[in-house]
Amino acid sequence: MADLITLGWRERLALPQLGIGVLKAKLDTGARSSSLHVDTLEEFQRDGATWLRFTLHVGRRQLVDTRCEAPALDRRTVTDTGGRRTERWFIRSELQLAGQRFSVDINLTDRRHMLFPMLLGRSALDGRFAVDPARSYTQPRPLAVATGLQ
Image (tube, rainbow, N blue to C red; front, side):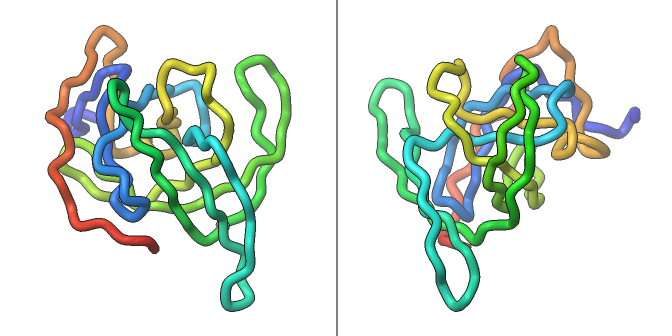
């Protein structure tokens, strides 16, 4: 555990495969899975596989409408903090945080009433990071990276 990078309860990260250079995220060790806010979501078929097309607004002062496409990983039942169970689409995408790049499973959901567009759960944090709830934004903004659809 001593060699884990310690992060704060909120950090900035990137989702380069989705074309998202900077996104604020809440780190939540109580949540198993990671969630990304989407404004729209539709499924479609490409080469015999299910893909998802979704949009989200990135930025605070100047909202940028970001359109993304990714292969669907699967649908899973997720229990939210209120105990409500819903079935959600999951994708797998590369995430960049604290100088590391790794793949993470992310469910797509409506988080418009939440403070952060992304919640990074313990499955993504486990074995990589420790979280200090007294700290915040411990890492520099992710560097601009070449992006592209997966």
